[in-house]
Each structure stands twice: as C-alpha cells, then as structure tokens.
Image 1: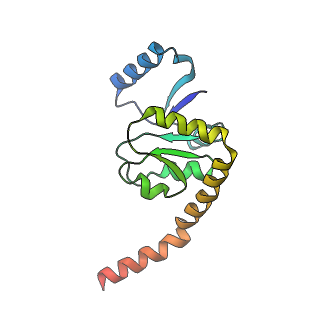
Image 2: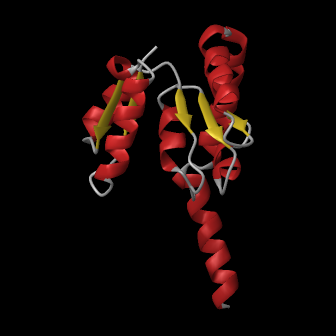
Image 3: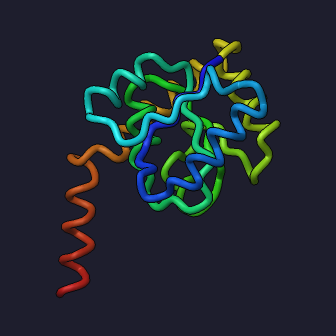
Length: 149
C-alpha cells in the first residue's frame, strides 16, 4: 500500500514537515508521498495509478475531486463532513468522524470486495449523470429566473 497525497502545501511548511516526520516515525516514510500541487496530467496519472480515493477533510464545500475520482472509476471513501455527503450521495463510503481505523477498513474493503466496488461504480455513474452540466444548467437557470421574476 502506498499513500499519495496530492494538493498544495506550500503555504504550510511546518505542517508538511510535521507530517513527513510523523510518517518517518511510523516507519512508513518510504510509502508516503507529498506531491504538492500537480498538473492536470499528473493528477489524472495519480488517479489511474490508484486503487481508491480517500478524503478525510473536515471542511469541504462541493468537493470536485470526489467527482473526478468517481469519473476515473475509483471507489471513494470520504469523511462525511460539511458538504461531502451531498457531493458523494450513495456513490461512496462515508466515514462519520476522524476514525482512521474505520477509514483504513473501508479502503481495504473497496480494494478487496468486487461487489462493493461494482455497487459504488454503479452509484457513481448515477451521481455523475445527476451533476452533468446539461442536467444542472437548466435547473440553475430556472432557479435564477424564479428569483429575479
């Protein structure tokens, strides 16, 4: 198992240093990578090389990377905080709090249970269809028209 962390961290060097030291102290420094900000091509490469997408963020709005991961065919496991439950719907496994053991078990489950992966993939296709711009745009226009009328 490898943990590939993608996302900007240049504004938080002390936090990055603490996480790097923590991974080393746990003896897993060799399998944890802090990639920082990446290009779209590098992001897509990371998705294609992954077996699952895990997000334990406490404060996400509409979290586009969850949908990107689903679109790449990855099972999604995410902390069910802020707007994540509304973003994911039934297309991912939601972790109720900071329970990292539960998150690890969920990742293990989606990596080893084909039925769970297939069910999440089916739900992901439905969720992605529901947020397709061709579906969402008319609803937004209708809501705005009703508001300004």
